[in-house]
Image (cartoon, rainbow, N blue to C red; front, side, top):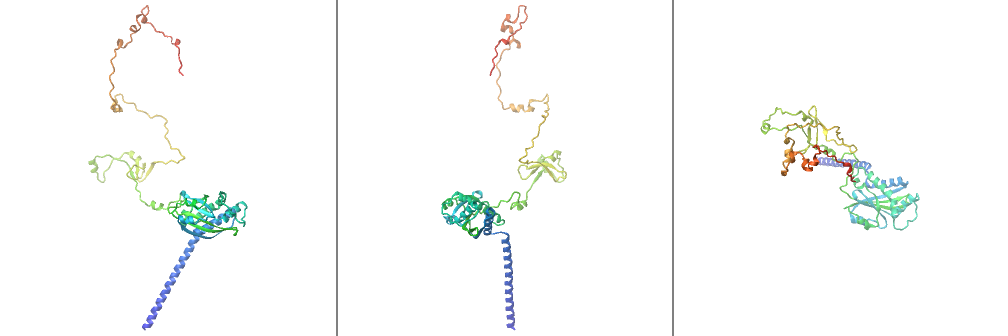
Length: 391
């Protein structure tokens, strides 16, 4: 009996181990299916680069381009300089925010791209071993610009897209030393791909060097909500509506109790101010009828193409005349003259003839009267005097 019981327990344990293995196999199959579904939806960088190269060559020149063995690795600045082929065409890529990247193409690839744009076909003639020129670099620009644009677009949901998008063809560099002086990123992503042009008529390697930018963020289209908009919308924001202010003595303010009535002016309904903090008001308006709404009257933000509304003054406002018995102090004259020094007294001048001019004492008896004793009229001929015009 003990042997039979032990054998039964061993069988149960074996079945339990078998059941656990079966459950683990089921989970692994589910995880594998989920991984394949994710890869079908989101491309890997290697697959996106292959498709971008093939699609660009087909759209531009109806050229059959096949990318084989796309590899990706991370290198530092010294590693980038060591990976630049000395016999390849070296090109500079202009990136966002002033960053730069690099790309190299073997001589056969440059020759094939030149042939398809000049002769509309790719030949198998041996490539001429000569120094590259700016024309050779310009012949590769359409393929590079189209590939880089599609490369970033195909990585729609990939986390590397912000670091890949925004690059385009820049200029040709002389050698690896010139490229080494432009390296400023701590690390670089390197993509290597072997390309076949026109069913293997030309074959060469393309190397793409893009800087690693940990702080790069994808810029969304205008109007698209930001990454933290939902969280920011849940933050509490306090807004105080101030109906008016009363000035009360301290003893009356301390004597206020629930139920007391405070007299308010009817004008306060049109002078509600909104405060978002302890500072100045941020808006103002009129209190609603149900006492729970405020119709804002300011500030009013006008569009850029709309001129601000300026009040038109058709006539001057009526100015009330000052009362006849108003003292100068009521108009502020005393305050204005309070800071001015006292003026000195004028010298005494004798008044001639009680304020009337004495022609007799000035021009003489004969000049002032005629023979009959009548006053003489002075008649001056101003026409005889020359008039001088001032220019």
